[in-house]
Each structure stands twice: as C-alpha cells, then as structure tokens.
Length: 436
Ligand code: ATP
Ligand code: MG
Image 1 (cartoon, rainbow, N blue to C red):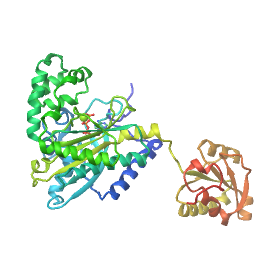
Image 2: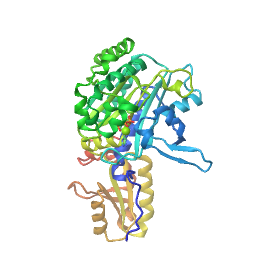
Image 3: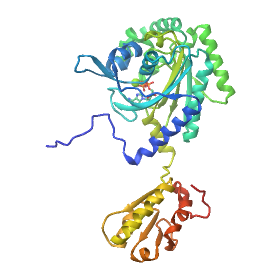
Image 4: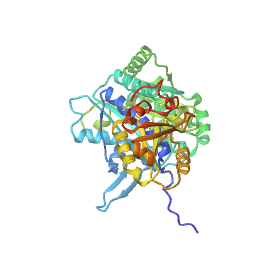
C-alpha cells in the first residue's frame, strides 16, 4: 500500500531544470510590455464566483464545468480564477483605472480550470495577458497583434501562424446564430454530445469544437463573415490593411470564435502545428461590451492571453538553454576555506553573469574535481596549502584541455571577467570574449 503524497492531477511542479525557459519567456514579455507602454497589474487568485458567471458567460465550458468553486468560511461562493480578463475589468472599474483614460495593463500568473489533463492542457496553468481599454478603433488591435509577433521574434519562436476573424457586433452574432442553427439542425444526430447541447445554449461555440467529425460537418456551414455588420466589416478591413503594411502574414479564418462569450469584432489566435492537438499559444480579441456588463461605464476594450506551458514547450523544442558559466571553488584543507569564501564573494559581487559555487563536501582533490566535472562545472578554482601561502589560486578548465595554471588571487576577478556570460562562448577561452 502506498501512501505517498502526490500533487493534484493536472497541477504541475515546474522544476529548476526547466525554469530557464519560464524566466526567459516572462522576462522577455515583461520588457516588451514596458516598451509598448503597458503597466503590470497583479490580481488575486480568488474572486467572487459571480464575477466569472457574469463575464465569461454561463453557457461556456469554463462556467458550466471547469471552475474550482467553493464556499468560504463565511458562506460566500468563491472561485479560483480561470482567466485574467474578468479580474482586470473588475479591478479597473473598482480602482477607477478605466474612466476617461486609456489604460494599458498586463498580468501573468496561474489560472485554474477543471479540464481533462493532457499534453498542453492542465488544471493549473499559467497565462500572460494584456488588455487595453478606451480605444474603439482597429489600430490598437493591430498594435496588440504586432506586440505578440514581436515577442515570438525576440524569443526565437518560429512556426506560429496568425489567424484573424471578426465576430461582428451583437446583431451580427444573432443573425449568424440563426443561420448556423438552421444549417446544423439537419445534422443534429451526427454532432458530438457537447455540440448537441450547445445547439440550444450557445451554437457559436460549436465552431470551436475539438471533435473532428463535428469539424467535418462544419466545412459547409455558413460563414460568419456573411452576417457581419458594415461597421465591423470596415474595422476588420482596416485591421488587415495595417497588418499588411507591417508585413505581417496572417490567415483569415472565418471559423475562428473564442470560447468566451464576451468577444465582439476582432478575434485572433496564434497557432502552431508543433505541439499536437493543443496548438493555440495565444488568443485574444475585442470585448467592447464587457466593462458595461460588469457595472462600469461603456468602455471599448481589446486584449489577449497566452498559454505559458505551451510557449515553454515551443521554446524547449526550438531553443537550447543558455546557462551561465559555472565556476566552482575547491578548497583542499581548512586553511583554504576563508580565502575561498572571500574570493567567491568577490566574484559574486563583481561578476553578475556567472554561477559561482563552493564545494563544501569532503574528499580528496581527485574526487572533488570529478564531482565538479559531473556537476557541469566549467572552471574549477583550487586552493590548497601552497596557494594559501603564495596567495595564488590554481585554475583548471574542465570543458577543454588547456593546462592547469596558477594565477595571483588579486588577479582572479580580471582573469574571470571574460567568462562572465552564457556558456556557449565560454568554452573557447578568453581571447574572443565579450566582457561582462
Ligand atoms: P481551448 O479552446 O483550447 O480550451 P480556450 O478558449 O479555453 O482554449 P483561452 O481561455 O482563450 O483558451 O486561453 C488563452 C490561452 O491559454 C490558450 O490559447 C492556451 O494557450 C492557454 N490555455 C487555456 N486553457 C489551458 C489549459 N487548461 N492548460 C494550458 N493552457 C491553457
Ligand atoms: Mg478551454
């Protein structure tokens, strides 16, 4: 009988060996948002359940069956946030961030949905998202899309395709809804169970079905674009002209809808074929009605959210990690400990792009060097009795065959400075190095 404690299904630990990809993604996004004038907002993980019911929509997958909802000790119904937009809008209204101003906000963090866990789909997952409030025109839609495209470029992510569509205004959605229902009525029995149910509750969501038979039936369904109102159509044309002018390639996908109820006009997704079935890495669109729906003054809005797990997976496939040059001090007797500690501290203070450790385990010099080698150390710095007496340090490169050399302790920082960066170049020696 095993009573080992285990994590909750669909909730992952992110381990140190993977963290470099998460940090790279988050750091790059954070810097890019600043450059585009977005401010970060940090929001609670818990909100009143009502917020999500009123924003995401009661006949969506999320509200119907995916939320982690419970009563707290006061009997209030609370929900672990399944997405970020509702909270941003709630905070925006509550803190006066939206009224009479343009507000550009971004957020990141864990989201919770009780879905069937599979590759790229988890119960706790992470999103980075951005929202812009106060601008009704298509230019900001284009800017947001350009921001995401630039993020892929700066991360070195390739093989992602941009798909765009327009949902029109609410009248166009009503018109399209009837046309779609009329078409699908004839195939009712061939639809998957979820889609049969959605035919009554939320037929547009059928377009979003992951069932391949249902998708096949949709091939000849009426196009959303035929029902779109003139103003939305102009908005969409203008967006495409801007994307074209920026040289962005994209595909108009007239089947693209969002899982959430609150979208209108522009919707977009970045999709990859490198991740199997869960290929959408970023999804967004315009939601001009939501602020008013949640009790604020009518405020146009547009935003997106990216799935960090899926992006990290792409980064892992497409980009080798770039660890820092790893330096290890090895002291051979007690008299060498204090100089080793002092020198290691000096390195950590002055050489920021370097991993500096001290081997505090026992063993003879050969064993210590072996251990350093196994741990992936690039440069071993050895201090024994002789080195203490002479104020020197012995340097051994573990990733190339350069002979061991002795240098003066007061020369150590300058000696190491050329190696203070990522490892890929550190193995060639100091001659062709850039400085810290
Ligand atoms: P799907 O139709 O795949 O369920 P969704 O419409 O529910 O997607 P959004 O709510 O728009 O997705 O979330 C934006 C992005 O967050 C998705 O494109 C995806 O990259 C990521 N994401 C959503 N749900 C999950 C999940 N359960 N696990 C991992 N990533 C997710
Ligand atoms: Mg979903």
